[in-house]
Length: 102
Image (cartoon, rainbow, N blue to C red; front, side):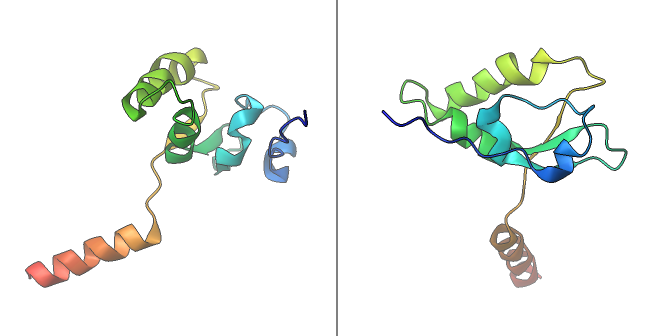
């Protein structure tokens, strides 16, 4: 059996060794670091997608897993930042709806 290769931690994170990162399964979810280079920023939507790959979990279970087992597992001062990303197409669709309603 061939072991699955996990994505590497982005160089920008490696350049700041004091940053706390989650387990390697979430490396592909890293989208940046904060302006003070103190906290890693993760794409929350991607994280939920990864958690939901477990066939025993529903999407709702994946959110619950995130809140209880990931979000609250680190002290606040080193806790990563989790963001809901907005796809460019989603933003364009919202702008189009606004202009059509005017």
